[in-house]
Image (cartoon, rainbow, N blue to C red; front, side, top):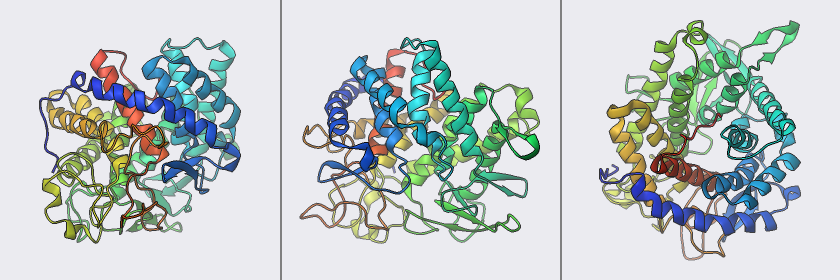
Length: 452
C-alpha cells in the first residue's frame, strides 16, 4: 500500500521537477536525430536506444508532443519549433487513421498541445495555423467516434481488435472527442444523420465504467473493488457483454496496472472536462448528476485500488496477479524493486496514475486530500533515481517501463531475469505531462487541461 507522505507539496517537488526537464532536453534532441520517421515511430528502448515496433504507430504523437511539453515547461523555443514542424509535417495520417482507437494519444498530444499553447497566449500562432489545428482536432474526434459498436443502452469506441472489443485505455483517449465537441463539431453519418460527440463520449465512458471497472458488488468470483479488465468482449450480434479479457496483462481476472492507470487518469480528466459543459447539454444524456456519478464512482474505485495494491513508494508491478509476485514476499509493504529476479515493475503506469490521483484529488477538494498526497508521493519517487534517467547515453527519461510482457517484447539486460532499466515513449511523455501539471500547481500558473 502506498505510504502517503502528507508533508509533500507541489512546491517541494520543484527541485526534482527541474531535474526532469534538465534530463529531458538532451534526450528529445537525441531521439529526433536518431529515429527516422520512415522506419516507424519510436516505441521503447533496447539497451538505452529507442526502437520502433510496428503495430499501430500509436506513440508518434508522444514523441513530438514531448518537445511541446518541454517548451511549455522551460520556454525553450527550439522545442516549440521542433514539435510544431514535426506535427505539421508528419502527423496528418494519424488524423484520418480509421484503424485505431488512439486518436487522443497521437493527435491531442500534438495538434492539441499546439492549439492549447496558442489559446493560452504562450505562442503567437498566425490565424491560418490556429484554424489548421482546429480543423485537425475536429477531424480526429469524429474519426475516433466513428469506430462505434452499439450495445443495449449505448455503445463504445471499439479497439483495433474489432467491433467486439472495448479497451479500458480508450477512456484516456476520449480527449479527442471532448476537444472536437468543444469546437462545435459532430460526426455526420448516413442520410446526413448527426451524431453528437458528447453523447458518444458519455456512452463510451459509461460502458467502460460498467464493464471495465469492478466495484466489489459480486459481478464474478474475482470482483475486487477498483480492479480493471484490459478488454471487455461483446457479442456483436445482440450487443451483450460476454467476458473480460486481457491483451497486455496476465489474465482477464487480474489487473494490468497500466490499464488501471489509464482508467484512473481518464475518468478524473473527464470529470474536469464535464465541469465546462452546460447542464442543458447533459440533460438529454441522463443529466449531470448521473453522468458525474458513474464517472466519480469509477475514478474513486480505481484510485483506491491503486493506492491499496501498489508498493509503498507508489510504483506498481506490471500486473497485480503476475504469477511470480508471491516470490517477492510482503512486496506491498516496502518500496518496489525494479531489479528483482521475478516480476518487472511498470514505472509508466506510475506516471499515468500519478496524474489521475492528482486530478481526482483536486476535483474533490477537501475530500480528495488522500488522492492528492498519493499522487505527490508517486511523483516524488519517479522524478528521482532509480526511475529518472540522468544518463545522457540513455535515450529514455523514465526507466523501468514495460510494454508487452506476455508477448516478450521487453528487453532483458544481461545478468537480469526480467525486463528492467528501459523506457517507453508513453512513459516518458506522461512523466513530462505530470511534471508540467505539478509545476503549474506549484507556481500557480494556469491550470493544465487538454482543452484550451
